[in-house]
Length: 432
Image 1 (spheres, helix red, strand yellow):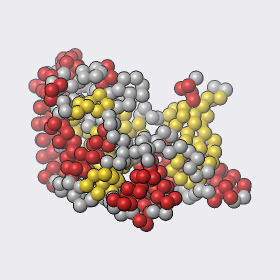
Image 2 (cartoon, rainbow, N blue to C red):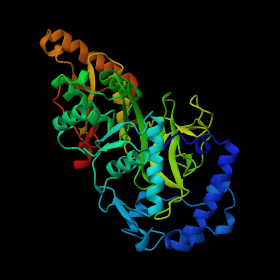
Image 3 (cartoon, rainbow, N blue to C red):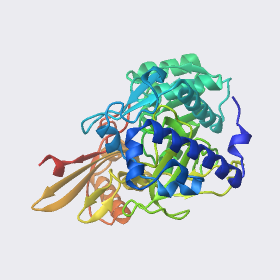
Image 4 (tube, rainbow, N blue to C red):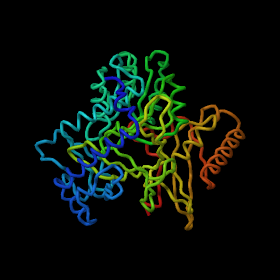
């Protein structure tokens, strides 16, 4: 598997034409096979013939995660059960899980997209890729696994659970790449440091996803492990990891537009936004058979650009995510995203990317405490130095989010580590 220039370097006109053809086919598919979409389109006075080009996408209705839950488990499937070869599902933390099904063709497309992402990160069939996402109903583990196999690389299906064993295998097997969440990779880096094994590994690249992370965190990972770290994006409802990935220039994540049609809309009005403006990312699947989705609202906040990248690709690029509209905290009327805290901390010396936010309400006033891990040396220095650093962090965070916060400094490895998606916030207002 190599970089497919025919797919990734099309002119915008060629790509737009291909998207139009595939959109027409997808709309016909769901209209005739999914009652949910047929009723939605009929309620808007739409028929499949009303969709002729990719520009007609705005005529179509949106799909939300609630729609998947309301049609649980298989109400949005567009093929008979006999054609579904695999099922994945989300965690269902708010009740019912969101369930997705894949045909053999869907698995092949998914594997190809992840392989293209790994190629974008500089990997080839000669690499040994350690997959440290969770396997099972979560799409991360098997998505990365099949993509690495499609690439022709050697796969180490490590999953998560035993970090010391993971780093031992990384060293013994000579793994040259790892796929995992960025927060778990930071924990792996800490474990390698403790074992004195960073000089003994052959790692050259990491492909990280499943949670938002800042560019500063990427640079810190690269400096700690002496590797290149790439951001891979996906979501189980649309496919899984491999919807987009960043190249060596890290100037946005390239979307595989031959399979996914992206839009940026206002989270408030749902009207399309122009290139460069931040809004909610919306996807329409163009080649999916099992559960095609029309204008799926991801809740992820980003912007999009269509200019040709330095790497030569003409695929649209989405910027690093500001956060999720449903992760946004409103504290004393101010919109706050955890990624803003992370970015502020990583601009400072002496701090780590490990933090925890506690939101509470005292005497009808919202409060925010940020617990921050700092280097061990600050706890052996004079108390004045600790006080100085606390005030500095408070000022930096206040400048970033526009709110006064309480900062509590804690020693290294105090905050709980996650082997999956990192948990950064406890909102006690929701527990009252």
